[in-house]
Every structure is written in structure tokens, then in C-alpha cells.
Image 1 (cartoon, chains in turn blue, red):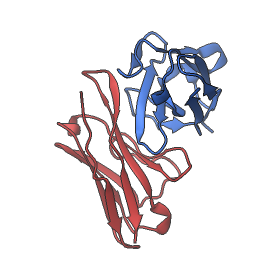
Image 2 (cartoon, chains in turn green, orange):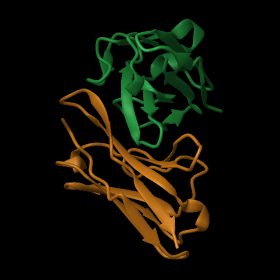
Image 3 (spheres, one colour):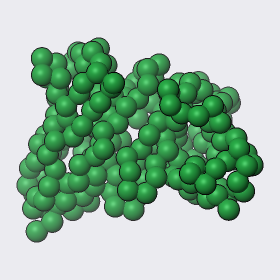
Image 4 (cartoon, helix red, strand yellow):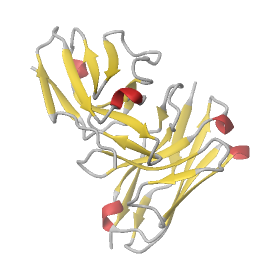
Length: 119
Length: 108
């Protein structure tokens, strides 16, 4: 059974940093692109970032480019999102997703982790 | 940037057919995913690759995509189908994933 689940999240002050992790199981992690998607309270879904299967290509939403860094460790089946210079409008539930430019395989999402940016 | 347009809400009586549209410039040339999200829960994919249905998703859910409109069709709607639905594509020119604004399906 394919599973992805987020680790991390929490309260961080404006300007602070936080690193989210995502663990994966049930599929060959190194052969699929992975993504982060977020949802601010009461709002719709917003794509944040995607990393290619090999980790060689990364893509970012304009709203996070230069502040967030996506990475992966295939040996540990882990996906990461390093978030720096956090702002109040980054407050959201962050979802890890088996999802990428090619959609011929079934997407799978985690349950999400809440990141709150507040003093 | 590429934009996907969904109606904010759709209402349907139980047992009837609901159709939720997703408009985008030449969306027919892209692969569309549809996600269902119930309150307090994570999104769940109900359709991917325009019309493929993941295991466990009822056959009542189907998708189509042509021209400038993709459509999620839910037949024999049940009360449990009430949720927000989002369409999503990958826009190759910008190398961005794009979500529609979401449609609230209300079962009357």
C-alpha cells in the first residue's frame, strides 16, 4: 500500500525557518517525482514545489522561490522542504504528495502538517 | 501564468448527475487530475490522467477533457459526495503545477 506522511510542522516566528520531512513507503520512491502542496486556512490548494525522480530538477511556485528548498534522500525514502524567511501568509497545512509533471500513475497525498507563522 | 477556472459551487439532488467543469486555455492538451476534499480531511484523488479512476473510487466518478474544458461527472450522487472538488494540471511552459479554485458540491 502506497503511503506518504509528513513529519514536522509547528509554530515558528516570522522570519524563522522550519524543515518539513515526508516519509514514503509502498512504492519505488526513487522513480517518482514528489511535491509539496499547501492550503491556507479556509482557502484552496496551492502548489509549492516539485522535485524530479532523480532530484536533478526542482520547481517552485513564485511565492516561495528563493525562500524554500525542496530535496530528497532516496536512500531513506524521504522528501524535505526547507523553509526560510517565513511569513505570516505561509501559515498553512502542508501536504506531501506523490505527484509530478507526469500523471500516468496514481497520485497519493499525506494527511498534512500544520505550519503556523506567528509571533 | 496558466489559470484554471471552476464554478464556486454546484448543487444537485441525490440520485442525479453532477457535472463540475474546469476551464483552461487548451486544457485538452494537458492531463487533468481531480481531487475531492471533505472538511478537515486531506484531498483524495478521484480522477487522474483525465479519466483514470484509482482503485477504491466508485465507478460513479468519471472524467473527460477536451478543448478548453475538463469535466468531472458524478452519477447517482450520494450525500457522502458532498465536498470541495479541485482540478489540477501541470503547465509545461512554466513548469508549474496549477490548481483550480475549487468547487463546493452541495447535495440538496
